[in-house]
Length: 365
Ligand SMILES: [Zn+2]
Image (cartoon, rainbow, N blue to C red; front, side, top):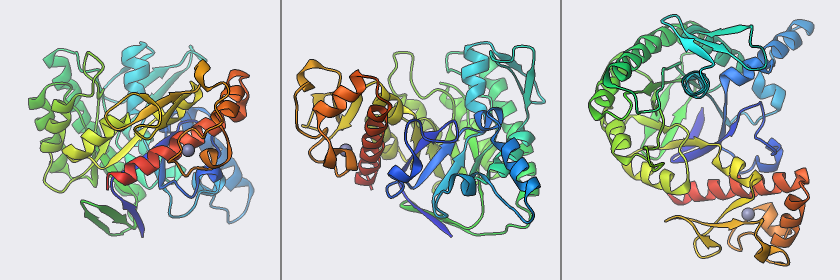
């Protein structure tokens, strides 16, 4: 039985590891990670697992055992749906048909990669993930109603296909799932549907109703979570939560800044993932407790470590943070490493930000 305390935050491990951060550095703090199904496939992880298992007798190596992740750490794999948005809709690298999403990627322009709802489940099964997401058709939110309705309805049809495939993979794995507003315990892989409907509250309601009629273990807040001004779309987040039966476990996909997480949690979401802590760390943007840095959000301040004012600053990044970086190093040292583009500087910054995020989410419980 695995148990998650809620709310919880999973850092993204897009290319089989958290960017610039070895798992063991942050293991004591981590409750889970998110891996990206499409990227895991493209970088050849499933191929490698197959090779290892074929070469050895009685081997059953999956991504967890290969990366030596703790048994109780939750691996959530996304479906590849977000890449439909980022690669196909935004960068026109492919198209979506009823069969699946066809990606044409810049590094192999002549090759087409077809990702179907079934194949997405097959890859997630090979990874050995604990929470599997159905392939969906996300949009940016500014499309017309007809396009949004069609994408939402296709998302429902794909979700039904994904569930059928998931059932094949987990037929011998009858476990139980117990959820409360503060915890989620489970002894079999979970399947997560993704609610679409763009910025239209009516379509969100319809999407939630269609998907919950099929029945899933949890539900993701799909699409682009920000409005046209770049602010978190609270109205649509509320429509998402309200579209589901009371007590549903909800996942704020790609949410977000500490402020966005705090608002989403208030609305009712409990599982979060985002690249922000690690991406911002590499750009020298460090999250700190309110009052310990430059004014930034409602729930946090920032130390932008590149600023001149930190050049000779011998204090820790955040005096109220208990992470190994704040316990051992100074702002001046971290700034120096980052200025010299020393990879250790990116690792230390990422370690602090992920640790800080975990403490922040815990403070919301
Ligand atoms: Zn720290």
